Structure formats: C-alpha cells, structure tokens
Amino acid sequence: MALAKVIALVAAVCVSAGAIQKDAAATNHARGAFEVKITPVTTDPILGRMSVAKVLHGDLEGTSVGEMLTAGTAVKDSAAYVAVERVTGTLQGRRGTFILQHSGTMTRGAQQLTITVVPDSGTDQLTGISGSMKIIIDKDGKHFYDFEYTLP
Image (cartoon, rainbow, N blue to C red; front, side):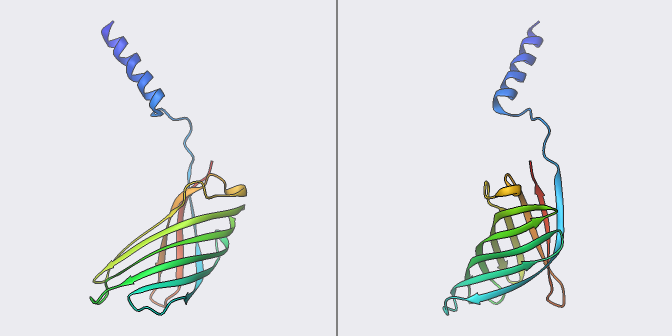
C-alpha cells in the first residue's frame, strides 16, 4: 500500500511540474543557400557595428535584415560578434517572420557559433516557432544554412 501512495505522489508532482507532456512537436529541418551583404556602420577597428541583409533560398525563401556588433583583438583570429536579425519569408510553405539571435566567438581560429530563434518572435503561420540554425561557408565562400526547428 505504501508503494501505491509513493507512485501516486510522484505522478501528481510530475503532472503539476509539467514533466508529463502531451504530443511533442516534431523537429523539422530546412536547408538552403543565402547571399549576405554586410555594411559597416562604424569605422572603429576594435568595436564595430554593421548592418546585415540576406536573401535566403531553399526550404526557407525570403529575406532578413539585422544588426551586428563585433569585437576584435590584438591576437590573430580571435574575435567575437553578436547579432539579431528579423527573417521574413516562407518556411516550407508557411509564411511569417521570426527573429534569430547570434553569438559567435573565434579563439585563434577555433570557431563557436550559436544561432537561436528568439522565443515568441514568430508571426502569422510561424507563430510558436523555436529552433536553432547552423551556417556553413564552403571553400568558395558560398553560404548555406541548416535550420532545425519545431512548430506547434
């Protein structure tokens, strides 16, 4: 009898804490290429500010505009950037907008980049979107994205 009470208590705690979920949204992938235009807004060689405009092709068709802040160092290939961009377009047939947040560092050439969807930034048919994006730059300098996302 004591075991049944413990099981009931654990179940109640899990339900009240949200640990038991209904159907989770499926993870989707969108891939494609993009062109990017970066325009310096300041001329400071250490702390920079830039305007960013992209045209996206593939599973995500559209455009984006954003702002980037950069930090350079005296050490070759060490730097950082943060950025936000608003994406407008059609993602695998669903139209709307969402915002991406970038955080990148480079330590003597070793790169780390995190790009995530800002929570609750999706509009229209992209309301509720969440996810993360990877950027791939090939040896010829062409840019590609791999976007892992969920939608309700």
